[in-house]
Image (cartoon, rainbow, N blue to C red):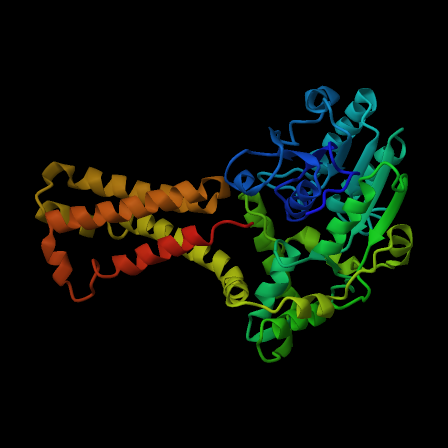
Length: 439
């Protein structure tokens, strides 16, 4: 592979390097010969797949002062900010990630002599804000425009690619349903291909590239929401589905459920911010983009035809909407088990323990088991603790099986099969662990 002389020896600070756009950009820039310094929230599982020169472990919610960035700018030639969050939540702050941290980095770059700064905003952020997402994105644009840097602002529409996350993953999940959801309140979207977005940044890295410009990265056609989902369904090899308009109360309930999940640390694409942004739509004109960089963005149908869907794609699409169902049902299973053990089933549980010879410990053991069940159920719902909770659930289930067999082996002969039904629960536990990662 030929290494571009414009990239050889260049050291690039990349924010949001584990994200949908950032990960693809890190791979491409490294392949071009650049030394990428990836800024990530936590150096761990997600960073092991990054082929970068160095990793900076820095939470943008804490990096709101120029002095937080100064130590990481030594030898940096260019900063690229791909970081973004949809909505405030247990792990996210739109103001910190979109506004305060970029402001601090801009100031640090000016002081350190890092001239070039490529910033990812969002389509419509330069217009009237309809959510905290677009409001904070717009404020960051204003800060960058007022700086002395050689800045470039990129405003992509909904970005889709072979990989999937957020909105692009939602399209595939909805395409797997037996009916096609029609969102009448959603505006048109000029979906843009991830490869075209990455190529745009690659052409903007050289010092001779245009600067102090803002470009809308829009695909060549504006599509309504159900048309996009229908094209993904066709790509996945499934017959056309009957379109169904979802009632507004149902949609409101789904968005509220998404907000609740966000407060628990999850990042579902269906939240009230998404609803507000979808109403406005994300359509644009790619002509200025093409004129500035010579890129002709590909249409969605063309991009899908180039890469036929595999069975793995169909698995992902079908599992996408099953994932929240699996997590919710599994958490409710443990919560309800705990409530039953401490409530209406307490006497039954203590009687079984007495029969098994636990004596005076029967009551305390049942209470301890019920509390453990409740703790696991709550921890499964709290995203930062979900993985550990699922492993604890697996261990506790096996403990119940072993203890039940030792104390009351006749449970294996019960006509309702309480010991037999444990194994599907264990299988569901492994399924939840297998599909837990978002990207």
